[in-house]
Length: 376
Ligand code: SAH
Image (cartoon, rainbow, N blue to C red):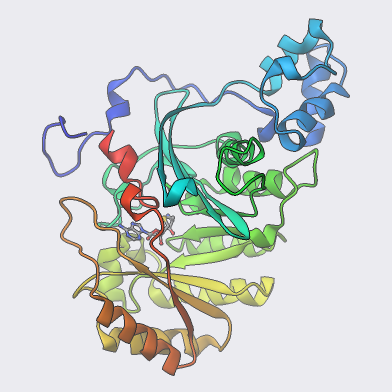
C-alpha cells in the first residue's frame, strides 16, 4: 500500500477492485456430509458421489479433477464444479528457516488478501490460518488491525488454507519428508470469534474423521481471541476441546483499553473470568498471549499484577506465552529488551505461573502479523 495517500486509516487496496456482494463459492468444506449428499441429489446426481469427492479432498489430498478417475468422466466436471470450486490463488510464497517456514499470501475470489503460515518442526507441523480478510478489532500494535475489516471468510476458505498446507507436505514440497498438519492455530488475520459460525464450522471439518473431514485432533487446534466474552462462553459449550488463547497484553483496564480496544466493552476481569470458565468446562489449559512492548506493558510491576490476576481465579489453569513484538513499520510500539522479558518471566514463574517466550520463527518474513497483505 506504499503508493496509497497517507492518512489515519489507509483504504485497503481491495476496495479499489470491483466487488459485488457475492458470497465465496460454496464448497464441500462448507457443508456437512448430509448437506453434500442433498446438494447432489437436488442436482440430479447420485448422492453417494459426495463421499467420493470428499475422499479426494480430505483423504487423498487431490485437487486435480484428472486424478479423480473413480468419478465417471461425464459427471466429473459437474461434480467438481458443485463441490470443489476454486477458492483462492497463491500470490506470493515466502520461505524462511530453510524452507520449513512458508508464508503464503492468498487472493480470494473477490480480490481480498489473506495470509497463512506453515511452520514445520522436527515432530509436528503447525498451520497458522486467517479467519477474516482484515480485522475490525483495531489493536494499534497489529498490522492487520490498521486496515479495518473487509469481510468474514467462509468455512471452506478457512479449511482450504489447512488443506493447501497438507497437500504441500504430502507432495514433499516442505523439507523433512512427507507429513501431516498436526496443529492449526487461528492466529493469522482476523478475529476468529467475530466470525464464529464459519470458524466453528472449520473446526468441525478439520476434526471430523476422514473422509468426511481432515481427521485431526481438536486438541491440536488453538483459537486465539481478543476476548469476545459471550463467544468464549458459547465456544465452551460447543463440546469441542480446542485450546483457547486469550490475547491479554495488559493486566489492567487502563492500558488494555488502549492496546485491545474491545476491552472498553469487556473488562480484564470479565475477560479473564470467561477464560477461567472455559478452562473449568473444557479442562483445557488456557493460553494467555502477551506481546512484549518496550516501556508499554513490560514493567516488572505489570508482571506481578498479571500473576495476581491469573492466580486470583485458580492455579495451573493457564499458561502465559510472551510474544516478542513484531515491529510494524511506522508504529510507535517496539520490542521489549531481552532483560525486561527475562525479568517478566522470572516474576511470573515466582508466582507459580507457567510461562514461555514464543520463538520468533519466520521473523524475517513477518510470519505472524499480517504485514505481507498490508504491503501488497
Ligand atoms: N484476533 C485474534 C488473532 C490475532 S493474531 C487475537 O487477537 O487473538 C494472534 C496473536 O498475535 C494475537 O495475540 C495478537 O495480539 C498478536 N499480535 C498482533 N500483532 C502483533 C505484533 N505486531 N507482534 C506480536 N504479536 C502480535
